[in-house]
Image 1 (spheres, rainbow, N blue to C red):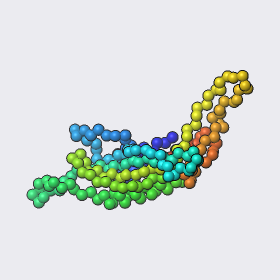
Image 2: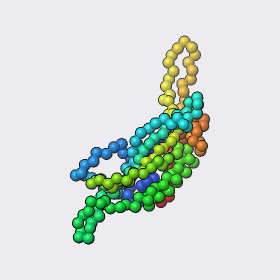
Image 3: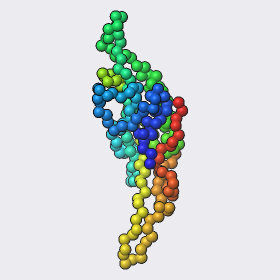
Image 4: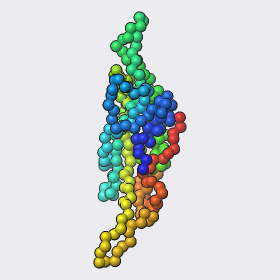
Length: 205
């Protein structure tokens, strides 16, 4: 199964060539002033995962996940200088609006790919800007809503018993759910298609 955050990072790297491929899915980061990351860079990380009860039908047995994650862009921390060339206390302004507009345009294309491929929906929830000695950080906050698709169990031989032994589960006939275009799982019999895979189509630059 294709993992969502690395897949999303690949889309960011494609749309923002100025990153030179530095769009990375991470779990956390240990900042070291002596070895700072090369900038600009985009870091994608999960914040928290919840069960999305609003999208689960009563008694349907569906499990809908709501993953809150961030996409954080890091830029060089530059400060303005006065007329004498002396550094001021003020951090240089980065045009977050242009970055946001390009990011949200990418997000709309990614959502279209996800809807067609049945891999959920990404919701934009906000933006933060922060400046430190390490970097100017522009952080997009997002939520990924997707229906959980169970993995196929491993086929095992049945335990001996006095009753006639049933046939063991066959990997070629086991039926599981594939997400459809409307985001709901539909019965499907297959062994070659990953029901929870994300489409490999890259968004346009």
